[in-house]
Structures are given as C-alpha cells and as structure tokens.
Length: 323
Length: 278
Image (cartoon, rainbow over all chains, first blue to last red; front, side, top):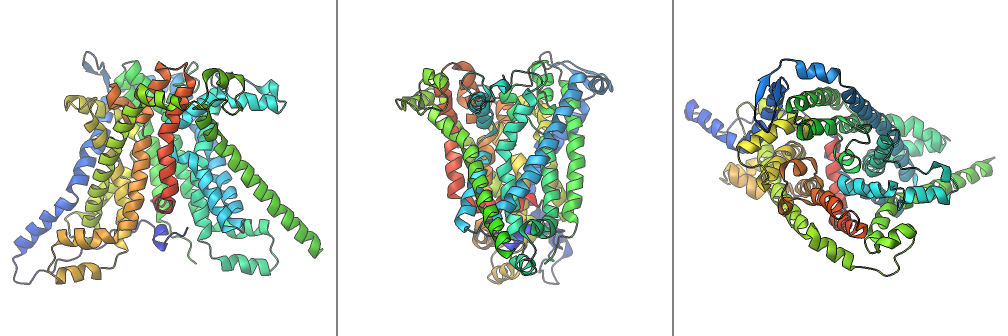
C-alpha cells in the first residue's frame, strides 16, 4: 500500500512550452498554423467545460435577476429582488446554519477524529490488521449516499430501526425517539449518517500521509525515550498539518454542497428544519416554480465554494514539508 | 518503573486494538443488517430487528430486480461505462496537450480546465435545465452522459496531467526520432505508460457515476431512463410497505461498488491520495 512520490507534488506551474523542433528554414507562419492545430488536444475538454460548466455559471447570475415561471416561460427582470427576498427568508438562513453545522461537525469527526484514528491504525504492528481496518472503514464511502441515506432512514425508523432498539437494549429507553421526524433532531441525525459515510475516506488519506513520514523520526524519538502520545503530538501532528488543512477545506466545501442525503432522508423536513442550501435551491426552483430565486441561492453557494477554493489553492501552493 | 511503563504500553496497545475492532464492527454492521433484511419477511423486520432471518427469502432479490431494479442497473451500467470512457479519453488528450504539446494560450487553457474543480453542480443546475430543454435532451440519457463527462474532466485531467509531467521528456524525443507523429506517440508510447493512473481514474469515475444523484434525479424522469440511486428512491415510494424488497434493491446497488473497491483498492487509494492534493 505505498503511494509513489508523485502523490504529494504540489500543483506545479505548467511546463514551459516545448519549442517545436522545426528546421530554421520553415516559415514561421506554418509553425504558427501547426501550433494552432495542436489545439485539437484540449478542444473537447475546453468545449465541454465552456458550454456545460462555465456558461451555466454566467447564465445563473443573469437568471438570479429575473422572475421566471418555467411553465409559462415568462421571464421578467426584477433587479435585486430575489436577493432581497433571500436575505429576508428565514429558511435561507436556516439552511445556511444547517450547512454550517454540517461543516463544523464534519471537521470534528472527519478531520480530527479521522486523524487520531489513522494514527491509531498506523501504530498497529500488524501490517495485515492495518490494511483490513483501513479498508473496512472505507466501505461506507464506496456506496452511494442514496443507499446510505435510505439505510439510515430505516435505522432511525422508530419501529423497525436498530438505533432505538439498541438504546432499549442498553437500558437507554428514555432516549428513543423519531430521529428524523422531529425538528430538533432531524438535521443532526442526517449529519451523523454523513459521518459514518465519510470518515473512512479521511482516515485512509491521513493513513497515507502518516506512512510518508520517515520511520527514522519515530525511531530516533523512541530511543530518546519519547512516549507514543508525545510522538503523536510532536512528530505526526505537525507533519500532517498541511494534509489537515486540505482535508478541512475539502470537508467544508463538501458540507456546503450537501444535497443527496438530505433529499433522500427528509427532503428538508419536518417543517424545513433540515433544509440545506442545495435542497432549498431545488425546492425553490422545481417545487415552488421560483427559478429566479433558486438562481439567487445558487449564486450564494457559488460564492461560498469560490472562497473556499481560493483558500485551498493557497494552501496547496505553500511549500510542502520536506524531509 | 521500566516494567510498569512497559505494562502500560502493552495495555494501551490492546485497548487501542480492541477499540479499532469494535469500531469496525459498528461501522460494518448497518451494511450487514441491510443485506440480511433483504432476505427477511416483512413481519420479521418489525418483530426483532437484530434477529437473523428465519427462512432466507432470496426471492426478495428477484422481486426487487423485476420491480425495476434490473432496468435501473442496466441504465446505470450504460451511463457509467459511456461517461467513464468519454471522461478518461477526453482528459488524457487534454493532459497530453497541456504537458507535451506546444499549444497557444497554454496557461489559460490550464486554468480553464482545472478551474472546473471548484464548480459545484448545484450552481449550474438551473441554467442546465433550461439548456437541455432547448436542446431537446431533457429526460434523455445523453444529458447524463454529457454532464457527467463535463463535470469529471477537470479532476481526471488533474490526475493524469500530474502523472504525465513526471514522465521524462526523452520518451517523446525517442518517439519523434523514430518519426512518430504526436498522435502516434500519444497512443503508442505515452498512454500505455500512464496505465496505473488511468486505472485509478477509471475506478474513481465509476464510483462517482454509479452513485451520482442530483443530475440523475433532475434530468431523467421516465422509469427506464433512471439510474440506480434515483430508481431506489422510486422503489421506496412506490412499494414503500414491502421493505425487504427495498433492502434487497439497496444491496443490489451497493454490492458492485464494494466488490470493485476491494478488487482495485491499491488504485483507488492512489487516485484518492493524488486527488486531495489538488
């Protein structure tokens, strides 16, 4: 389970253009034509992205200034009305809060929890056990969020679900409840499912990062009489710091794009208590036929993810720890 | 003193291992529960959720298959294969163009393609619906094929490009001395050398497409056109009271990707590890 050195290269600047080995007598014009013909290599990718990713992005901004009924097809320019409505919409703020909760809880479990877990796994002496545990923890990440969401819908189900049954079995019968059916527990039940689904992915990545720390560092510390706990804090933790930063951004960015599991488990209910930006956008557009407003919510999602992407880029560009 | 700390150390090891194994059991149990529920009867589900099935009703799986899961699976396989092949080829071409061919505005093209990494599908959703309606591709598998490819090209190009940058330039020089054109060098020399990263990207794209929900839900509505994730929610809403069949359907959707992960673990890990450094 080794990862080659290429794995941790920072996103390097593009290679300097290789000058074509054209004989000197060749006309510069034909070289230029040839150079332009080389565009065919990147053309499919550029066209696909331009038409189906960047163009919609720009269009979305335009739509967010319209009142748009998709059934009648009527579009009216309403200025910043959608944004004004958005800022006065308690469900928008509720959604934003839920996304934020998602991000905070995921950082605790999927970043810091996973890091500690990875350190525990990598501390095991049996190579076989390390491999087995890493793989088992990852399995929930391989299945779809739809299957995971439906599965936990049943796990939380009051009559047949194993959560309430387990609480009863442990003598905690007082805590049994309809987890997804109550306004104060629904979003947390969904977030808990998401931790189950995603922590193995992060653990795996931290494991890879820890494996890349040379074992001599640990051996030297060990000889100096440094205990395992202190080795974790003084060697492992600082050397996976950059990985931690990246994982935090990836996790937070994911938390603001949540859609699938909420849609499957509660559709944002009960009473919009588990609504997130993604599901609120969907509901505004496709259920309430308010596409201009949905576009305004999409712009909010775009701004949040853009800011996070810029931070991520800065972290990636920093020089990595060398050893 | 030395012996006492040694005892503590051993105790710590045992406790950690016990904790890790217990956690593994808790993590994997819901999936075992799901598969076992797929062979129970409806009344068994409600009597004792932890009990093993009394009579193993494998025909639940057949029922699930006949109630649409078979069709959903076929659609999923079709979309997954087509978009994975398209994504990997288009990305490999782009990566080759960006690393080994002299193209105009190299830097702009690079930023344009890799910038796609930060685009959230939700942001583009509303305009895409309008676009595909006017293209006449709404409720059409082409919509999924195009969108999956477009939104996966940045990540896939990123991975393949990083790999190609590490291939020595002498490889191309040798090929050009032999008189091979750029296209031939790509197909016969560079692409075969990229096999490990190509396997990784193929696996990651299969995982993504197989599990994708948002686009699949919005852009297809007819039964036969639906992929597994959307089909399963249909199965649930249509036959919601026949829970074992729903569990069987979920298991049918989950098993292929779990098997694939264990079969290609090494490549998955490589791709995931390379990918987070984006």
